[in-house]
Length: 339
Length: 81
Image (tube, rainbow over all chains, first blue to last red; front, side, top):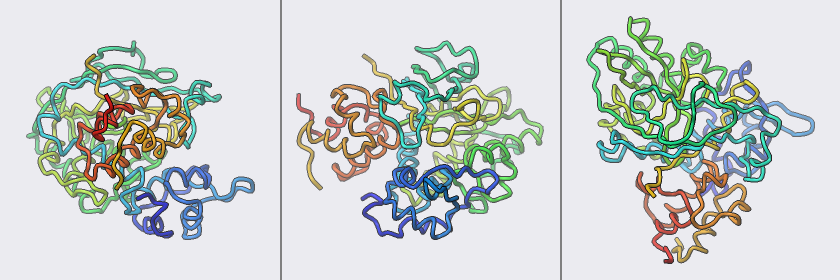
């Protein structure tokens, strides 16, 4: 089933389940045909969203223009289990249901970071045609991070790389636990707020991610917001902590953020959003997994490729500005062929 | 549910998942999806279509193997050798 075949008002149910982007950070630049493609919906369904109150501006030539992050949240919260955002979360989190040993064993990946330059995706000829006038820069893998080994590609000697890249990388996970009560306290504050729905886990626009305390106070968070907030709490408690950002590898590569804390000289990963999703499960089809949720407090997974950032800054830029959410559709990942 | 019977049928399944179906015409059976410009949203729809065909969820390792037309056909149990 696709959303096209669902009832005409299917998408409307999402509107009271998330918070739309504040007007001062929203970018109303996505037209109805693009929104319909992104949501796999009919244009009439998108029009009904506008009528029902989804914020937009009306352009005399292009008609209603929406914020892309709002549209992704419509897709995530509409409850069909069939939209791209819902399915993406379900498929990427399926590794949590795999045997525990598979989370940590060394794994070789082929990664292609070739950000899309159009909101509707792009055909190969568009990619070959060049940057479409945009200067694209991307963050490179952090080869100094524990468990990250470059097998092919590079060099990655600067944090930002012009255009895209391909690389083969070995990721090795590690099972760790955490003993420091200060870490447990900060962790519980963040994860419990998400699990109790005091803070809604949803897509957050990049400008609001940069102001993560405001996002949290507004009652919304995604992986970047939660990880930056957790890192702040840990540093305030006297610990060495950093918000990290990179790619969750699986069926494709997805922008993801987590937190790194140093305990007893060992770098340990804290992933509050994975823990939240695995704790409560998800109506979109992600299974509950207490074992995986527990592993998110300290362990490093062989699916997370950290990139070179100082505090979970964006991974892709167009002309020096953070690229829109849709640029990520061009990030590919697959297990490396053994040939 | 209609059983997938051949690589041709698998290509039809994939075509229905693409925003730009023309990509498939240039894609060999062993060419990598991502390298050909097939994006994450399209991969998600290919995986969903395959789950619909199989009538069951794909396991993690199966999802990771969805990289070529032939790989999809293998998973569908229809590889023509």
